[in-house]
Image (cartoon, rainbow over all chains, first blue to last red; front, side, top):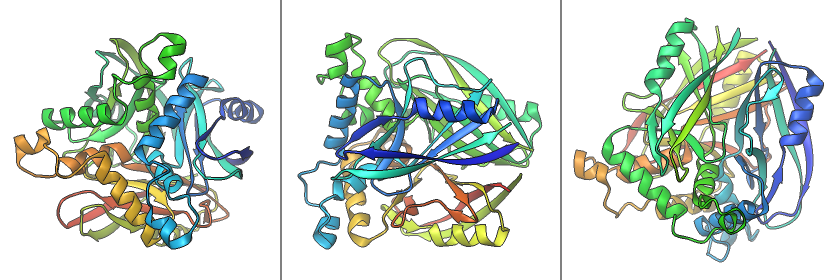
Length: 139
Length: 139
Length: 139
């Protein structure tokens, strides 16, 4: 049983930028040659989150609009009053979605549904350079 | 330390069908004889989610109604306009709840609270046959 | 590769009491001397949740207010009608946030962002004594 910590660098546009990570993670798994285990995707930072979705333009927009309703950008946030960042909504959305996702794999293949993709969402209010943790445990 | 990937088959009715998985998962753990570690429950598919709840009829209804408010069924979704599935709301709810849950165990027993149960929620807009991943890591 | 299950005791005030766990978890990790792996924080109980946030008073208030909107305290809950606990809102919030979080570590250090903290949220409607599971897997 092994633990291997890898990193994935991304440039994002912020404002609910939803990025499909499935290909890069499956590629890393193939390169490592692990057969059975799990991968944990973790966002170091408090304005991003990770989940899964059917990655097609309609749903990407639907999810983004749902997040706008849950923590609207136009509202007054105590964070902004204190720090002037203007990204209070980004922090709240990130805390609700969560920074961590675990996906099992078997026979070297992520056990995702046919249309299911792993996505990172950048909630911040500006373009960001991100480095995600992609940690594999398995054999 | 071992990794064992099991599967759990379910028939669901969709529309926030909330199903208690605690018994079957505890039974699998007992059959494997692992003492200490964790189990990851993963939903392969983008219209289901997994979390914990006190599984009693009142709360099952309360959680369902809260999900209806967060992503209402009656609303217009870009996904539906594009694909005609009519289940845009299902996908959005699934992405918000998330497809993955990790529960530690010790002395062969899931470390859940007394009234806390592991549940799968089927958000889709029709009955589905599901196969969940139940992956154990431990010794 | 080792699995070590630890526990963390807390006194909380309930009503979205948000408590920073980062220091105690990092201390436990240092005491164990593990270098690479992951820690799973798990809430045994159905009225608490775990996530990450930049732990500053403004955001703590913003997140609390967002949770109030998602599952308002003043609303009628079926759980309360049945059981008279008055904490239907607590259960719904807990199911939405989720009871489990996994954070990778490397070189003995949690791979959190600079301003990102691990937090427990007690959603219950009264002070509680909690015992959280802090389970380490690594080498």
